[in-house]
Length: 490
View 1: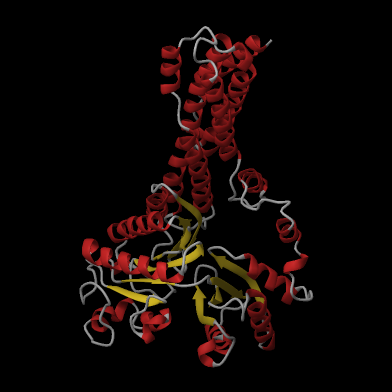
View 2: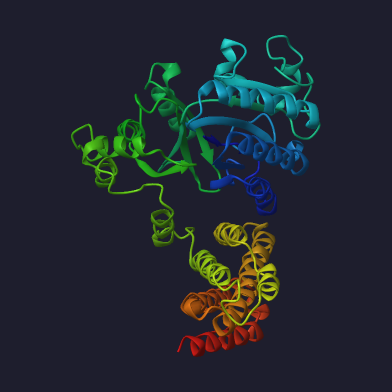
């Protein structure tokens, strides 16, 4: 059973708050944070996470609780329409879960938010309790500035919770919906009226493309305008069709689409549609995609951990997982080999008795800790990259970079420490454990040394130049452990 949640928070500039929101999600076992997207003009962050339904619901609640505590809507300004700190929290069925089960998740979360956080909550999409509330634009129409007056009316009273805004967090919208693509198109123009005309022409409510919601916005930090869209029915209108139509309308008025932006993740069907429309390939494209055919022939496991891991590490995207993530995964493999060597050294199969092996194993990290560390390394790097990419004249950039450096240094330093534990334990097992498992123990030591070295490189690279840590002692311990393991292996 797999559910996706894509909450939108009214914070796109304060990295420390964004980190807290992400950490609230990743702290819940069984939940994977798949993507996070922050935009300073929209002043908005979108998290995409998935997992078992109960775990996803818990992660959503924890993230909203952080938003209520950390985001003060009284000082909030941004170009995106919003009602509150945790603006919208949708549940999306992915695998083995029905839409009705997602409606039940939405209902339960709404009740909990009202009860524990005193938030007024609207229910939308398939969870809407009134037909007009199914559409998010209708609910957002009063925006934050008109929220208090709207909540006090019978027409717009909340579905759950008090009929007044939270003092600092406004209101929240919770719902259940199908897959949606948030797709923004920046125009090579600063003419807001033009962006609004194009948005009006393409949105379904004005007689435009089916399943398309659109608005024209200005992006003051970028000096241009944007047509921001939600594509709610990808079977009728995908990103290729939307791009082609916006480009046609823009060219008719003497400009063009300068750039496009995805908010969150794109389903494979949308990629196919874009290829069919923009590359003018004959539809349906599904049968012409290599991975699709391999999967149909059972020659490729699309969800296999090795395929996923190598694809992530091979990605050329600057914010994709890198060396630190690879180091933590390598250490997890080394730890697995070491645990095998320990297990097969029990019962007097080596010079270490079971009590000594128990003590040795008790000091080791778990594979789960190392896999979590791999994820944390990726998130720490992505956070630092986002801070570094803020405009040089942004007054909050220096503080954001400083805050982002802390986890970007702390995570690889933890990797070094854990690598030293694994490496020294592996050396002892190679020397005194089951002689038939010496190569497994030696492998663990070698991988621990590699993880420690890449951890040191990352810790130094991510720290300010004047504060670069050395970690010479930990690396010396690892090198000695490898030398011992190599000698035992012959």
